[in-house]
Amino acid sequence: MSSLSGQSVLSPEARMLEAILFVASRPVPESRIADITAFGEGKVRSAIEELKNHYDAGHGLVVQRVAGGWQMCSSADVFETVSRFQEDSQRVRLSKAAFESLAVVAYNQPVTRGEIEEIRGVRCDRVIETLLTVGLLRIAGRKKGSGSPLLYRTTDLFLREFGLDSISELPTLAELSEMARHKAGNDDAFE
Image 1 (cartoon, rainbow, N blue to C red):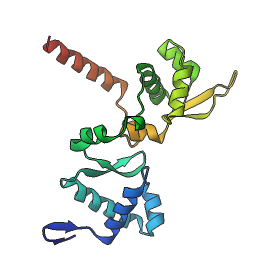
Image 2 (image 1 turned 135 degrees about the horizontal axis):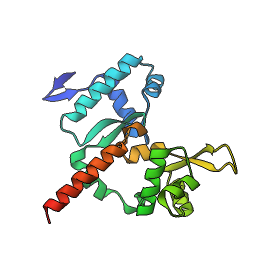
Image 3 (image 1 turned 135 degrees about the vertical axis):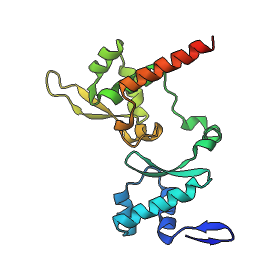
């Protein structure tokens, strides 16, 4: 990287990557970047690192690994402003029941509707339909056995919306319990 009038100049590879990520509507895997650009894997990783460093130096955007690929996202410090800018029609508003069902699927996938209902203790066919419609869940086949019920999994959109690279990044149930205990302790301190 060289400098013109105090601004860093990206390499041609990083500039090409920047343009790809700018127009991409979803995360782009490194293998796809290598195919498109004809760069080797090492050059792709180097361009990603250069671009990440460039944006980490005080820009409103960051380059982030999400859902198995790379994407340009708004940086944390401007997220609220960007969120307010987005139209309400673009947002998916989920009910508490939808969040609970989504959590059951995320932690137990693949899972059937019956299994979700057993864990939650209530019917959830409408909630599942909503989650399928907005693209946070997908049908992942059928369970072998009596009646062959449909199996559900989370989608790449779920990973993107929650800022995860993979399901393995979800906090464990023990970590969630600890966070809840910590929050309860903090709430008690302010009463």
